[in-house]
Length: 246
Image 1 (cartoon, one colour):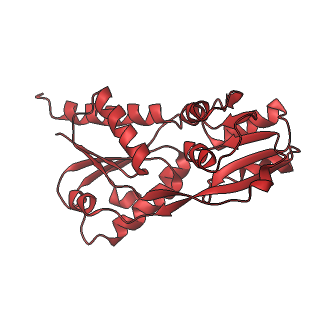
Image 2 (cartoon, rainbow, N blue to C red):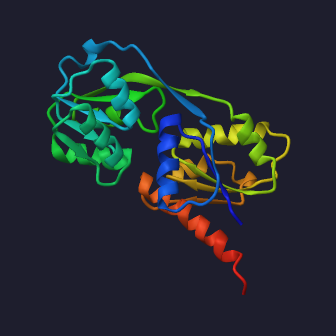
């Protein structure tokens, strides 16, 4: 059985993941149906005028910071390798990243490193964790600045048509919010014939999925893009193995 990969990330991130999956051996179709659209917003830059260290928990934050004309000569902490790469491409030189690839490990790493204060978390309007609040309470002066919005989008017509057919659909979900939005869109559908194999980037993400509408919900052990890609290919291998003659 050849499954279809359904990607609900913002357009650029979805396209990049699709390219990586195809290059790594994904043989099925790919449908890109973003449930989030990134919108940069005007922010009060005076809030970061005296910043000693910047923090990004998404490469979308890096892109929004560049669009605002933000300075790139400060030390910066990034949540994972892709965000760190985006920071490097933006012109940052002093870049460090969390070893665990999530906000919890990022907070712990920042606290252990005793960064130059104040720390400013440049983030989207929706965040899984109040990072700056946690740092501040732990004794590291920190604040946050919202520099982009993650606008919710309805599931596209091609995606709804896909889910109405008796096919297997692999759905990698990269955040609790995208998982929630996906579940909301499923609830709107009068009929779902597809077998949904959901791959969640974290336990919080998995908990936000309506598992009753899925054939399976699998959580990767490491919260990053490589682990998600490996899981997608593993599902493909399992599906193909199940169809081999016994």
